[in-house]
Every structure is written in structure tokens, then in C-alpha cells.
Image 1 (cartoon, rainbow, N blue to C red):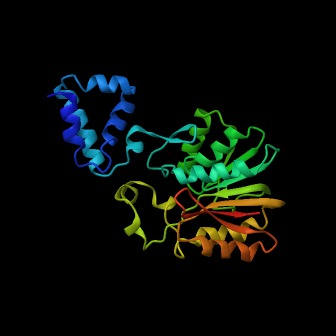
Image 2: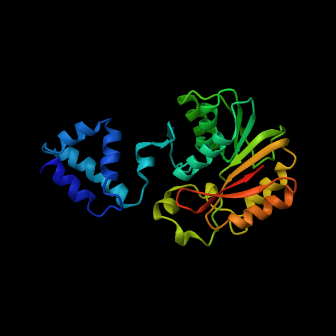
Image 3: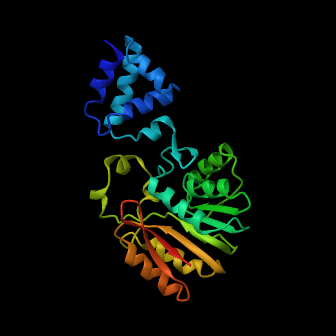
Length: 270
């Protein structure tokens, strides 16, 4: 059997037929040309066995990023596994908004619920004179985030904290992509997310609004006079989250921002 026949057969029922190629190429460090040349060769029994095992994992909805052990985020390559969420493109939009709206002054930044470190590392990487701290309730997530910071040569500090419980500083920018999925909204989620990504980083009480309320309550005492807050939200939560922060920050403008698909996805407080 040729490689191309094996790949077609084992990819046939996958939601994304290119996932098998993505995983194999990255596990074996093959560029696109090497992969295309491989397609014309005969596949060995051992290779077919290994390829079938990868296909089986993908058919069981295991995310390809977890299988290869990394995900792309902006210009970064981040290690990911079941300790953290896989960074999403919409979170890249949140980072881009922060960078676009804030000059390269010496600012103090806090990323709450950092997970893989995607937001904090991106900001530290893009603004080397910003002082960036990142917090997470999960010690396991912080261990992985610290590895990612080292890999990507980003200088930042990590703190284990439930929101701002263990934080004493004040910040010019507080950013968070917190857990915001309601426990009764699993019907909207992919099976791969439900089965493999950490519940702690996905779900929140009070219809997904609990962490936003805690951030709003605590951030009042941790924001500089001209400080700003940036949040990622669920696409149905815009008005609810806006109301939570407008109640606490009556002297600031709380705005809802849409992602590239026109869905409510971000909140700014400034």
C-alpha cells in the first residue's frame, strides 16, 4: 500500500482531514515537500501501525495539538497538554487590541488565569519594557506556562492565585480570558473540548459569570487611576459582563467589542 492510500483511508471520517497530516508531519519534523514525496512511497507495516494509532486518537476527538504537544499563538510556539486550554484565535484578537491601544510605555500588566501563558508571554514578547505578571489557580498550569516563557525568552513573573486573592500590586492593565462557560452549555461545545481540555479552565458558576464578578470586585483595588481592563467573553455574555463592570467602574467606559466574525468577544474598561 502507498502512503497516500493509507492517509486517505485513515483520514476519511475525520472532521478535519488534514489533522492526520498535521500530527504526523510535526511528530516526525517533516516539511510539506517531504510529506508530499512520502505520499508516493510504500508504507511499511510499522509505519501503518503507528499511523493507525494516531488516526485512532484523532477519531476519539483527542486534539491534534495535545498529540504533538504544542500550539501556535501569534508568532509563538507554546507547549500544551491536558493541564491547559489550547489557545484560540479569538484570544489573539484580544492581545492585538491591547497592543494597538497601548503605547510602549513602562506599564505594569497582570494576566489572570494565564493557562499556557499565551496572553502574558505574547505581551511580554511584544513589549519588552512592560512589567508582566501572570496568575493562575492551577499550579500545574503555571509550571507549563513558565516553561513556555523560558522557551520563548519572555521575562515575566508567575503567581499562584485565585483571581486576585494573593495579588498585592496595582496594575496599568489587567487582562483575563477566564472560565466563562455555563455548566448547562456543553451542548454547544466540541467533543474534543469536553473530553480533553481542563474543566477548571472552561466552566464557571452563575451561568459562566462568576469569575467576571470576582475580577470586577477585586480589580477596583488593584487598578491604577488610568488603568484599563481587557476581557475575553462568551459570545452571548456581552451585555451581562458589561453591566457587571459598569456597576463597579462608574467613572470608566465599559465597551463590548466584536471578533472578526462579528460576535461579541471582548470587553474593555478604560
